[in-house]
View 1 (cartoon, rainbow, N blue to C red):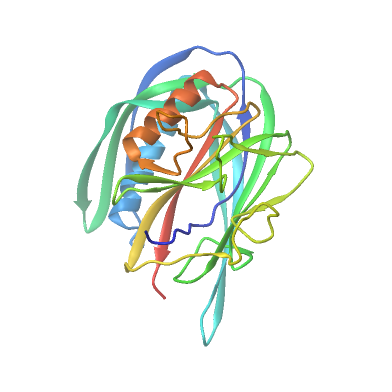
View 2: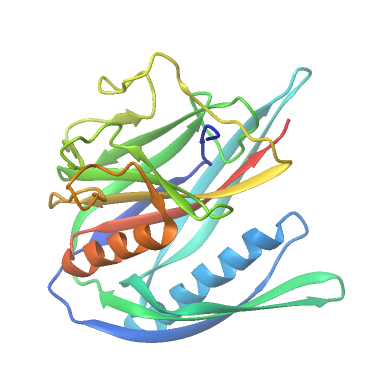
Length: 281
């Protein structure tokens, strides 16, 4: 199996937890993709924004701003970029799809236009319970850009102690890989404190069981995967076999069933999903 590494994500999100009714809603969004965005990226962006639009229409929004930066080094030069993005935080959580998203692809004067329609179960957020601060690190630096053989780690901080797991989804083969906890013989999620800053998937983590850092590799020109970070103030358990053994790799369908079941029964669970793009140098 190819070694798995992921993409920058630098974000701060407020998680809401209150006993709220689960309901089914639908939404639609049309995404006009810039020239540097691939078809796969555009499809996923349209789907995610359709979900956001649906939740916003049902529960309302909060306005926030996210700053991102990237540094790319080559043998001859180094370049950096900075962007400040105004964004909208919706007052609800998308728990699970009730229908497969419908995606329509068109081209308008050479521009890629993707329209997505979604339907799913959602739950309203009411009172903030904890904050999460998450960033992915490329060679020790926060960055959105990863290339072959770059070092990868996830920096994580929470305002409330709880439990965490990190999965990597490879949609090309429809498989889910558990990256954290590293080893979970009893099926437990990783317990963490609210008083520490963690650097997961790195030798900086005392529980990291390997001598070498996590390295990004790909044999494709551009490779896309999904990084899923799961956090809850309640303990939860990893996917298990029928005999109760930890399952570090499973098919995407079984992973989605496991995740959806946990999200519906645990209102304190937050699930953060980001697209992973890996490029050849």
